[in-house]
Image (cartoon, rainbow, N blue to C red; front, side, top):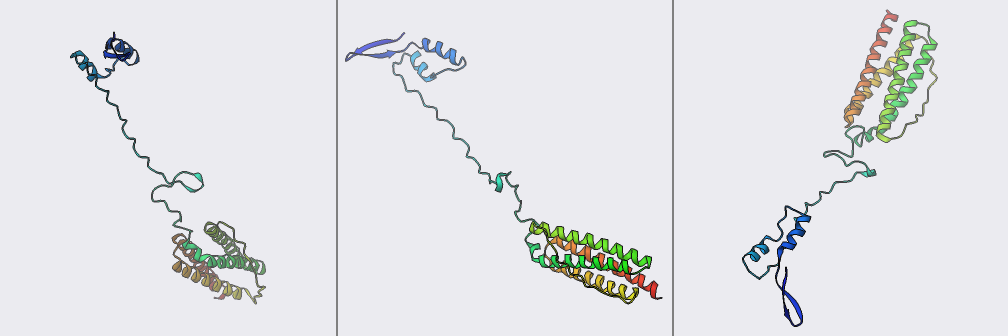
Amino acid sequence: MENTTTAGGQSVPTAYDYRIYDRIWQRVSPDLNPYPDVRAAADAGDTAIPAPQEQVPAPAAPAVPVPAQEGGGEPELPGAERNPCCMGTEAQESLEVLEGFIEEELAERRCCLAMACRFRNQSAVKLFRRIAAEKQAAARELGSAYYLITGSCYTPAISVEHLQWAGLAEALRSCYHQEACNGFNYQRAADETTDPCLEKLFARLGGQSYRRAEEIMALLARLLC
């Protein structure tokens, strides 16, 4: 038990019986030995009670800031670019070229359909209709590229001239020059653009135009010779 002395009307503790506290600590934490230095001093008969050392908690690790993504989504991965490598800023310089190609392909499609209705040669009719279908597909691809770049659809303004051909050979001659010029213009646009995906698209469509020009030349050779 605790011993006390009187000083100025107050009771001052001189020694402690740590068995009482041991029973309390056994209930709280049986494996804990509280204040070992104090107990050692009490066992040695030393009445001086050193103040217990305050345990300072270890500093917490600093939080690493994570960059937030616009719109509240997941954070961007390292190395991710806000500007895409294809159909992005570089391709915007070719928007007028895209618009011109879309309108040209759609106008020539109508021209080929008119040729297919005008003449009765089955080989020529099949060729004109196939060319018209390919031109429609090309216009759709170009329109898709326009949407990828701008985020909006392009509405072409198509103007078709009412052409009259004296015969099939003259119509094939006109169609050949259209395809040859298209191939040249596509190839030039592919060389001038700095967008790699747009370059591949122009080069592929240019190859299709040159291939159609060769088919028209072959059909014209059969008709003339």
